[in-house]
Image (cartoon, rainbow, N blue to C red; front, side, top):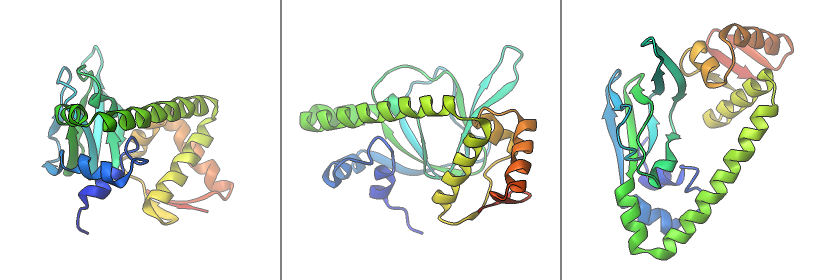
Length: 214
């Protein structure tokens, strides 16, 4: 399938509600499908937050290192998922690092190009800020919602989301169950019990890494 630069930029949550003519302007400052080999780094701790990036294909892990030098998986990004949208508005540095888990293609909008565009078009700046404010409100509401959800509710929400992204009831889990547990803030042993419970309750069918949402 050919890559649509317009659809790629439009898929970023911060831009999804903007008019097509604004998306077209953003496309002119975006770069697309830069290739990273499995094991290569997209950014390191203390790198400048150069801009937002979206995973077009493959998997990217966002990790940290504890005081003992042990890597800790914070979360994973898969196809059509985005990272660090706030980097468009700040010159802070990364505190973690991003590494390609598999061969990956990354699309990006760099902060300098983005802010130069806003300087040239003040009316665009207002619309972007309004969209960003809406996005922050949505994230705050999501955080509140997640804090009130039980572990099995978080897992079921994730499975339904992945079913919608794949546009089919049956799909294969991206990454390992350990990685999924970390991203959902669930202990790995608890995640295994939850999968068994959801299967027993007739909400999913489980065949190794293949999931069917019923």
